[in-house]
Image (cartoon, rainbow, N blue to C red; front, side, top):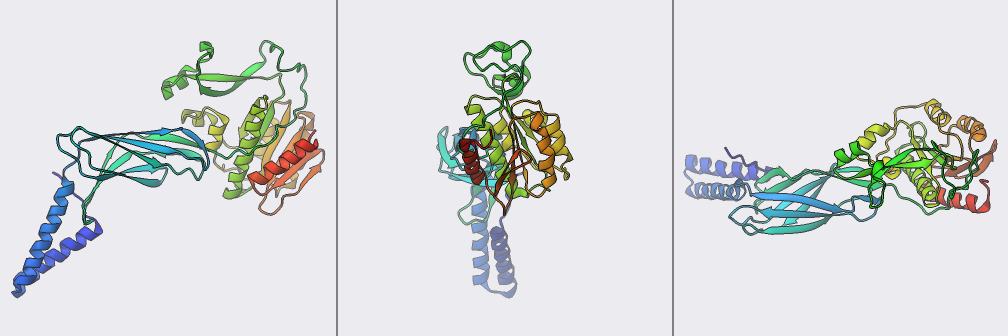
Length: 385
């Protein structure tokens, strides 16, 4: 049995037509009865235009699958009419997160193809679930709308913005002799996963992730004898609200990227993150993890301080947190015996002061861009050495 859903306009038109037919017949008004019959015919004809399911095969591609906030991302919709009759114009709806995106498609001849491009909104960072695709048939009067789910889901990673900054000068660690020297046995440790590129050692392929994603994935390792920049992102709602948390994520991304591009390894810790669960969703890089970062349930500084306490010592420490807990800075100052230097970035809606406290550089900022400017001033001025 075929069901064709009426829109509110369709229900009103049908009710009006039936009312005119009944009133015209009962009260002896042939004109009203004729208008009612014409209305019923019109509604019935509109329903017939959307009653038959189109024999379509839909697929969607998008490039690239990883962008930064605000960068353009385009989807390409491919529709194949597998039937023997032409398919009239229709609308395909793709869901990007919770937001529907409508893609109009012109008529498709029998056995024909139609391709349409559309923009994918990237105003906010996150792991965006795309789809499933839904075909919507609508009549010309707006009386009926029929939805038919088809097509596969997809994932688009929207990374946080990364600002241009100078890499952090990193203090020495015991036995460090420079990047050019060969690493001592046993000094490398797992850092992250990434896609395989020609020339990678096949022994580094991570087969479990490869089986899950369908693409070759390799393990990235870092030399633990080389100075590392440890970046700790606070995610407590008591540290900052949702808007400031977005700015804090930008700061963490900026520090990580500038460190790696400067030739140093970076180690990222996100408070409250289930790293295994995020990896199972397809995250392979620190920027993927930051795209998926969410605020956690912890409300006291204990979890933040504990995550710093268990971090591998050596190199620099950068902690991004809120500005309303002066006791946190005092506790982080104790890390100077394990890290050189120690920088605390405090995000606040009102304060952007930068100062030293107990030997720790405290960089205040209201936005990620402001933090980047203050960071460059500190690094170029040698204030963090």
